[in-house]
Image (cartoon, rainbow, N blue to C red; front, side, top):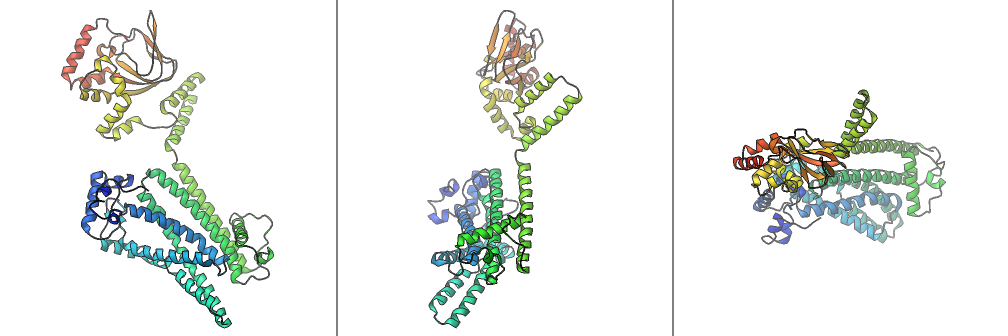
Length: 518
């Protein structure tokens, strides 16, 4: 998490420190929802003008709070079953203090949810109106949250204190039964798993990281945490049920001689039995169920294992299917291409060159360059082409010291081309209507009298684009070459909007009496 910056930081001096934590921070997600820094600033003003205590969904306080509650909730979901199953009423002051602290925090969470801004489904704005927040919360998660936040920790702490201070045997036995009932009742706190799932979903909405990466990471993390909790709960139940029956003689706990074992040994055996049943494997240490209670436990474990396996496979399949779609599209295209080349009985050497061309052109990722360029704004398109080709264009004498608008217009006409090693890019004595700019690669220019090598940043064919004359040299690629080309027709389209430059270039044509060079 990062400190408030942008609009939220600007209001820190105007408001007290804690109030600034309630305002939306400037991050990737807030910019995605509101569109600009100005819109985020207006959202800050809207919240300040409301004059009520409301935590904005994109505020730093909301981010810190979610992370804290995720950690507390996960610890509860791990510790509560272990406390009930294995600690046998001797959880210690530290754990009881943590229980009280957690219950207090979840009660505060219920209260804070009446002041927590809500992100609408269309993500156009956050709901900051108190009445709308209250109605929405009461209709959705209020009842499950109240049940999950029931303060069992206070009852257990009070009952433990009474049990330890009472010397009357009859009252002590009665108190022990009450404690056991309350500990079983504390299982309702496991309903906090719904809070954990919601916290995961909310982290995706308020994160400042790349959105797709965050979603994938939290899907994987939440999946493995849910599987871990399922195995953990199942392992605790394996020991908890025989404990409720006061360990009958034929139960697995007595058979494995675990009555006086440590908590870690009991827990390890319980998880081992749970996993063996969930994945339907047995290592010979477990007999068939000896009573109907154990039989039901085994059946529930097997069904939960099937569900776990199904969910794991389904999620893994979905994640794999959504990973790197461009590479998958490329493989699909290449598969069709190979079928076509085989059907047309092309020579193996030509098939290999075609495969090499696609690899050099697309790099193993399929994309439609024209579609990409057509979907961005004209300003972004100019910036993209300037980043790729501006340095190449400005090396050509006829484009040097020209109007910036003319250069930008020419940039938009450039076409990306790839040539493989050995390709003849242009042939001598063949009319030419394009010039080339070498982005990466090396070529050799062969005339009747000499050979010249050109590399990154060089160009050729500049006179042909003006005169449409013949090339006086053959240009071959010495390596795989990535080039940009400009055609005569595209240049003429640009020159129609710049008549002064057009006249100047015609003067250059008149001075070129050779009829065209490379």
